[in-house]
Amino acid sequence: MKIIMYGTKPIEKSYVEAWEKKTDNTVKMVADLLNDDTVDMAQGFDGVVTQQTQSLGSSDVYKKLASFGIKQIGLRTAGYDMVNLDAANANGITITRVSIYSPRAIAEMGVTQAMYLNRKIGLFNQRMTDDHDFSWAPDLVSNEIFNLTVGIIGLGHIGGATAQIYKALGAKVIAYDPFYDPEQEAFVDYTDLDTVLRESDIITLHTPLFPSTKNIINADSLKKMKKTAYLINMARGGLVDTQALIKALQDGEIAGAGLDTLADETTYFGKKVSAGQVPEDYKTLAAMPNVVVTPHVAFFTKTSVRNMVEIALNDTVTIVNGGKTRNAVR
Ligand code: NAD
Image 1 (tube, rainbow, N blue to C red):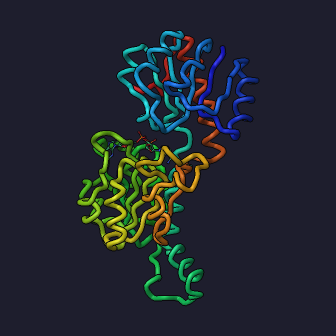
Image 2: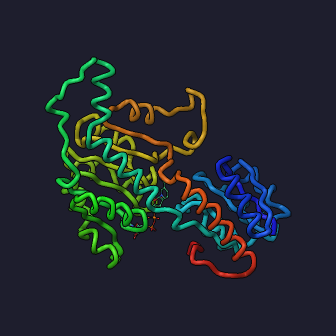
Image 3: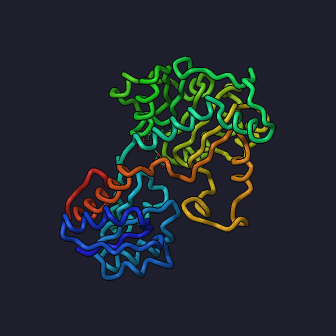
């Protein structure tokens, strides 16, 4: 079987080559993303795989793939908001995602950023660098995690892994998720969104981006949070109203933010750009000592990359051969 893999990164090469050897299939790796300009590259292949946060393009992309005999698009990501599911369904294209590649990778990054903020490392750094001030300033004293309440919004695979880590550290963990999962009960107390916003010292977002979750963190919800609270967003930038967040940070409505995603990240995250292409909202946030921004790399561990490559390729073979996979997006 011949598969074209869009949006590839050099780090994936060794995993792809190992998979080709193991399964006797061939993979053409291209750095381009799948969109209206690149869809023709898929002609002559049996399967398509991609990893991208940008839209896959207009409905013509799905129409063209179907005309090339392509039955599926295998996403090497958990999120699938870049896909037009209606267009995929209309053209008989099954979308698969790697729903679980290493929830721990993302959970660990969220906890890492929260720890950095909670211990006020950015604020210490600023004082040491700008003012040669190495003093133990009383306003920079921290709380230990076991004294804190952590609120999780979206208690799925990643939210659940996050809950387990905080629970192991001794925090009180509460969570809001419209769907109850009895397996999480050992790690969290379920509650409503308002209680999570009002009672948490660390609020960590792990819900997908849906119309119902867009700007779930907005000017109103930021006002409900404690002035000492930290907001962690490891999920999707669109969950947070960036301008409202900047204002809340400037006005001291919350204590800080850890962000692996930003609403308009697709023009610059994941690539090297010129100084002029760096948006103002990023510059404003990154300049704040109580904010940490990473370029959508919470997933970026060796375990994740290997699993994303292997699971997406295995599902591609399954669908092309007429089989079923639990990773199909419905
Ligand atoms: P998941 O499907 O296992 O869990 C999502 C949870 O959100 C579910 O339990 C669902 O019930 C809940 N949810 C849905 N609507 C909600 C709402 N309105 N309020 C609160 N909860 C709601 O997904 P997952 O694997 O845990 O991934 C979560 C998200 O993390 C992905 O959709 C993706 O956007 C993001 N993600 C980010 C990275 C990264 O590198 N930063 C990597 C992977 C995934």
